[in-house]
Amino acid sequence: MDVGKGRFSNFTQPVKRQDFSDRLDQLKVSLEDIIIKDFSVNGTVKVRNVADHKEVTVRYTFDGWSSSKDVVAQFVDESHTGSTDTFAFEIAMPSTLSEDCELEFAVCYSASGVEFWDNNDGDNYRVMCCSSCPGPTVAQDSPSKVWKHILNYIFYILEKIRVV
Image (tube, rainbow, N blue to C red; front, side, top):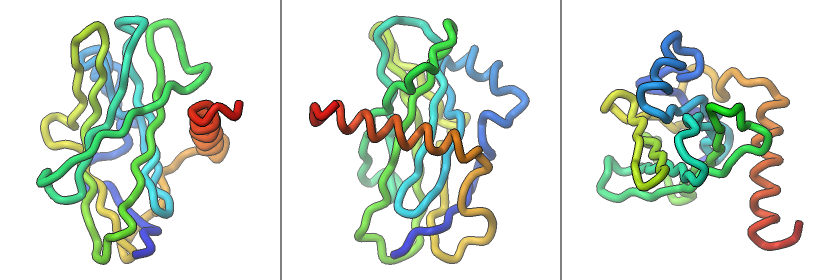
């Protein structure tokens, strides 16, 4: 399946919400935005800086939680503001999908042995992945921000295989 389109089924870009900062203060973690492109969903997560050592994971499913996987988000260089950090993640679409599907996910932020969750107020984040979905295929995001995510991800991979 050529997953070239998608649409948000139960949310708007969180960073565009008027209460984004208040939610971040309350939850300590918030999905910031996502971009749907080709065979992946790329996103950023904003966290309050409650500890030096932190981990951000995105738990997701394509089958209504019969199974799930976690993807570890990577720190975005130069995103530290003193009170917040930004992490980037990518969820690859399974190549075995033959029909339209729904991606469902939630974000977990672990710091000092405590977990903070952003699960879209208990409804999880849902993205319909399909070749015939109406509406935009990519979230409204600047090209420079998209390239920054891509380059950060490439450098992360190169570091993992110790090329850089």
